Image 1: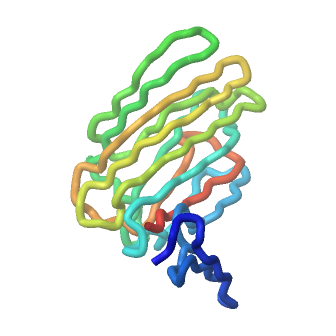
Image 2 (image 1 turned 60 degrees about the vertical axis):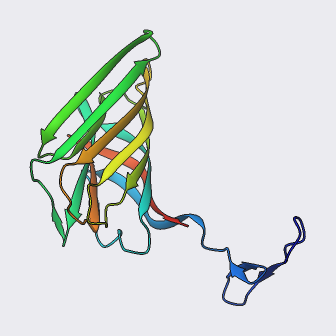
Length: 195
């Protein structure tokens, strides 16, 4: 029995950190895939979703490059192939800061993946960030996601929240993250949640 504030931390030679004999070194968000992208048309990561974790986080910070509007797309994968079944639904609520207005986008049952809002890719120096939680992609139930994002198109900043669902009980082991057009450069990381 321990009293609050009397826990004993031990760092093992394996790198494990134990508190009163319990391994606490692998709790919280564990980095599974770090992807530096440069003039990329997309990033595919296979075998990242396993039974080790139930929920995942995707953190993206990129700059887009295209002659017009680009969109942020996520396509789920199973056994090395994109799932392009007509099962993706998503919605985005956006607040445009510079013009003080709001709008929403609904994408009901489509084959091209989750659509998590767009930005003007022709603006030099634009910045696009997304913080996405992906729920249960490896389980045999509907995969859902939710998150927030920010788009800085230099003269037009937008913040947003979004959600989506894959309308089937498919078990996924991979993901494709890509702009809907053009390329992007930056960093995309995938984490697993360790309980």
